[in-house]
Length: 165
Image (cartoon, rainbow, N blue to C red; front, top):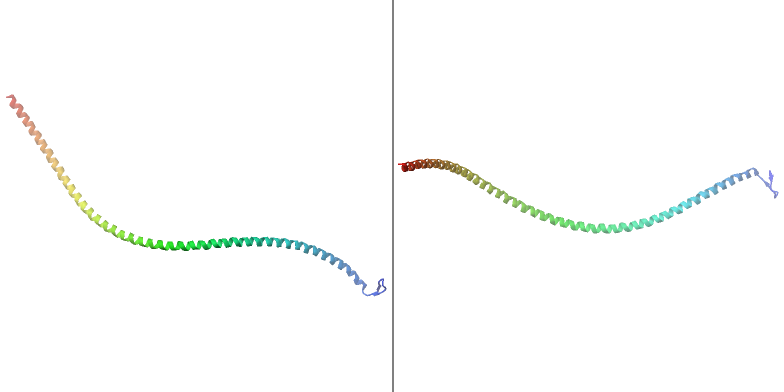
């Protein structure tokens, strides 16, 4: 047993050595406090970043809202454009009908041209035959000219001989 200065008997004084553990634990608590303080600084800095991020998010929301207005306006233009496209499709369909009718007229005109072409071909054959007749006539004219020339020579001889006598 041990006696304290007050003269009281202190049982289990050996356990008072646990104060070393308390001191060591206090050091750990102090070190832990430093970690907590450091973490608190990080938390504070993170809070500032969160606040700044919130400002960016708010600004981004304003841009999104503005873009949404542009998208809505664009949708109106798209709808109006769709109406114009539909109207244009009706004009295209009507134009196609006119083109179809025009094609029928062209086909009929082609038949007339083909018939005229046959007549022209027949006429060309007649012209060719006529040309052959003209060529044959030209040969007859040339032969006649030779006969005329021969007669002229005889006439010339006759004149010369009549003068000589």
